[in-house]
Amino acid sequence: MNEISEHFQCLIIGSGPAGYTAAIYAARANLNPVVYQGIQPGGQLTITTEVENYPGYPEAVMGPDMMVDFEKQAKRMGADIRYGMASEVDFSTHPLQVKIDDEKWVSADAVILATGASAKWLGIPSEEKLNGRGVSACAVCDGFFFKGKEVCIVGAGDTAAEEALYLSKVCSKVHMFIRRDAMRASKVMQQRVFKTKNIQIYWNTEVEEILGEQKTEGVRIVNNKTGEKTVIPVSAYFVAIGHKPNSDFLKGWIDMDETGYVKTQPGSTKTNVDGVFASGDLQDKIYRQAVTAAGSGCMAALDAERYLSALELSTEAESEPAMDSSPN
Ligand code: NDP
Image 1 (cartoon, rainbow, N blue to C red):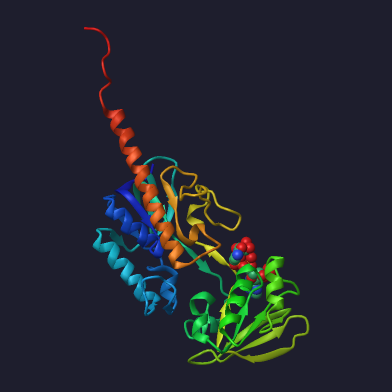
Image 2 (image 1 turned 180 degrees about the vertical axis):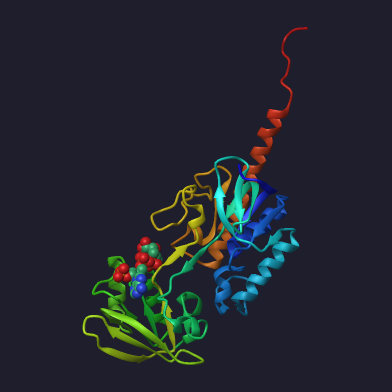
């Protein structure tokens, strides 16, 4: 048995657009939500620059500022927002149990999972050095800042294909680096990429280094068959080699697909565990936008509210004295 240090009606794990939106709705529904922000308070938007495609910000907004606004709004509604990350769960009993920071166990009647996903990077030091200065893992977020410029993208899946096509409409030329001699993307996406005149594909090619000090100025690539190295001048480097959902701490309890994305019941945010709901990028590998994550955070709070109302009704029914129907 875990020793429980606190009990909450509604626990929200994660603080990106999904977590904060769930918090706003749950607080307004008097569910007294407690949010544990996780390792990166504010989520992936805190590592982007300007966000121009979130409705309601006609002049655009910096990603980190937007997440401060989300947090303020959730707090104003009454959400209790705390530092700390969920390190383990025990969903064998109700209330549901969650371990925070590997230290203390808390319990909750309903849990909303909103821990998001993290972009995968090649892991070369210059990615970190120039992050936000022409290095990005989101073409839809940042491509527009390189309007009319030459850019490059690494990856060969559907995301890379989709992002290369997006960039081809905004930028003058897209250099696409593919590590094998084939693309993983679906045939239809491959055909679109091949037909696009300003996308140049480099097969069997890996990026060795991103060049530039204060901003991205080029990349040094290597052909992994011939060993030939080439420098290509570009203003931006996009990486699209997949995302990893932050779901490791849920393994063994929550149903996931083979890549770790949490499975939800169609048309809802319900998971396989009663009272546990999933929202945002943790359960969405297709859209992955701030606005879709926020939308699913709202859905999770509404699902949690319905679940908690039903739970309350059944608890009340259990505690009412049985009616004596025998004649006196
Ligand atoms: P994927 O895992 O499908 O593809 C990742 C790509 O990155 C692969 O081509 C892989 O190369 C490459 N890659 C991985 N590591 C490296 C590395 N270190 N260096 C160079 N290249 C690397 O991820 P996606 O994000 O593209 O897609 C995830 C899922 O989402 C897929 O199921 C996809 O079909 C789906 N999706 C669907 C969309 C749609 O239907 N519209 C849109 C976007 C995604 P390699 O092939 O050599 O392994």
